[in-house]
Amino acid sequence: MPPARVEELRKRLQLSFAGVAAEDSPGFAVLVKQEGQALFEEGFGVRDLRGKRKIDAHTNFRLASCTKQFTAMAIMLLVHGGKLRYDETLMEVFPEFPAYGASITVRNLLNHTSGLPDYEDLMDAAEKAKGPMWSPERQIRDDQVLQLLKKESHGKFAPGSQWVYSNSGYVLLGLIVAKRSGMPFGDFLHQRIFAPLKMEHTVVFEKGKNEIAARAYGHLPTILTHGSQKTYYQQSDQSATSATEGDGGVYSNLEDLSKWDDALRNHTLLSEKEFAAAITPASLPARAEPRLASDVPESLRQKAASYGFGWFLDLNNPHPLMWHYGDTMGFRTAILRYLDSNLTVIALSNRSDLDAGALALKAVAVVGNSP
Image 1: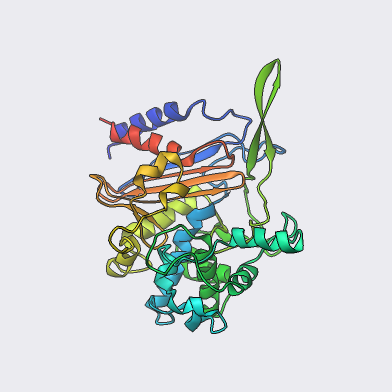
Image 2: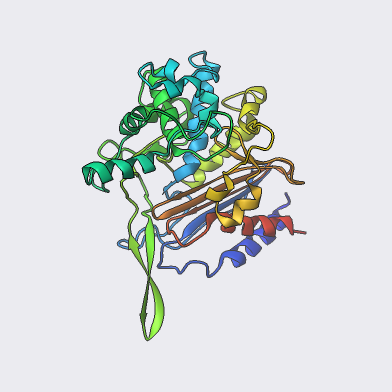
């Protein structure tokens, strides 16, 4: 793209995002790339309220469910290496798993057709029976999620018969990566994905084991009315479920995610043929009701046509799209990749009152209407 056009787009994008976040409030970071060229890479606001350090391309945000694309890639790399099959069942991987796991395959876990119980529902039930068990200070771990699922006798529905978003499935996928690779989930992602791609500041966060450089802390808004209404932000980005890994434990930044986008575009980790499975919609019986869209931010709801491996898909649109969002305590994230124009937009926010999907689509509108 000619430098003059890039500069014009940069100015228009800067103007589009001006005023969304005050300079001294939690904010967001946005990357816009086309054909591998960064058109815009900017931060707005601060990554924490104590030091007031500015958000930039090196600020690391918790990706929340945008982690799932890395978990899916890890599984695909194990399949590529002959250490796993998509048609293997939970009982083949975990022989002690109850009988209902005999028909749940790795593929079902990847595309949210497993019917596994929701582990947060199981946590609630366990605490109603036994009293408080988990908290932001005493967080549930992946192996505890597995133990909760093992205590159940059946899933929500027959595997492959419905399509319902499942964090439980991606926690189990992270455990499968660890079991079949012989190393912790975070170590496998580092050795097989992050290090080869030189994503030097991307990590699976484990409290007490590693640290997050240039870390953005999540914030929740509080609206106070004393004569006039004003919004205050409180640092609060840990909950009882913040320590699980496969469904949402990765921290990263714009710089590293740009390298990830390059790897996907250039098929660096897997051949185009092998990666095709990730952007192949889950197959459902006729008249099966897809229920992924209910979990999607309103800004992206119309684009949740189907799901592959770690990616929402909207492939029948005039502008085919693979994308994901993340939504957790104090963070909102979105990664949109338009396949027809090689346009990628990434939005990362460290406050829960910003819709990262809407921010990303704002950038898409500017680029799409560019001269």
